Image (tube, rainbow, N blue to C red):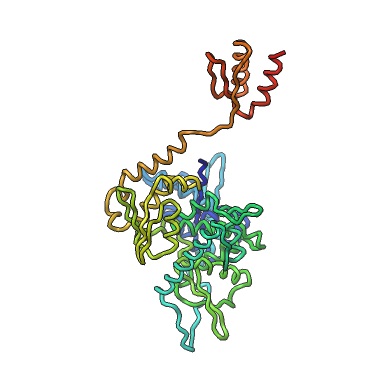
Length: 452
């Protein structure tokens, strides 16, 4: 069973993939420089700040002297990241060796930012007519509801239902790998789509954002401008309102797409329209590892393969249905069981045993999470065994030959099939032979020449 891996990259991976010209254009923005700096590994930050007011190139050997012997691997990671982002400009001289200097555009803007202090990209709106903005708790609930609604649309579309209320930009992201559609059939979830649903929320978000940036040029949007705007969003204050009319038309369209994901909440008054960033938006410049805070789990797994999920979420119920059999539901409890049949269905859809086990571990109820292991070993072992059962037998289309006129013809046929890499099985006593379908035509012509 082929496994399709979905790799969720953060913004810095997207920034590093830009051309040198677009990177230098990004570094003209003070906020981008600050976002880049705070996303760097600790040792890379140290190098940048130490060289910030140095106008000459520093030899690579000198940088190596700044770290202890056990920090060599971290040093290499830091240098690689800085050169990928073109923050470090590398110069190689045959006599003097390799040396590094800071990107002058990045250096100038970061100096300016440190000296003059940070200024917000745009000021929050001041309402004098008593408009009540949502509280932080209400905003968090809104973001969660939007995100769950978004994923439910993906699941429902995978079952042949029509997508509703999803922008064309987001629909293209679905169609780029999560959904497939044949001529007359409705859209269906691909292997990547099923795997996507079991991913951590932060990993899902980074995947969507990465794909959204990747197809920006199809919407006549410069990816560098889009990355710049998304990074600017991370400097806004969660829960504050910002005027939509301070944005360009492209930025307003982007915000409408981001509202589908719950990154912003759009509101409209009598005269003005505004957007309110949620935590999902203000954390965009944080690395994937740093933003992956463990959420409280809801799944309790028993040794008899019965599973109880303490949840009222329809989305979580549908995700469990991907690999388990739902037995009954109460207002705040989903009772289900992992069976051989339910797992075989999951494996057929491209979900692997490791992904199921990881999902169960990440979503374990706090009482179960305290145990080691959090999921009973007999359950994890059996899930892996059921998956390995599918790999024990491999189906290969083949042709069976018997009733050879002589032993010499049979042996010649075996040698011929072996040379073509198509011999699967032979019985020299009864003169029987099985070959792959790919070499059937060649074998038939060979046997025809032998019979003359």
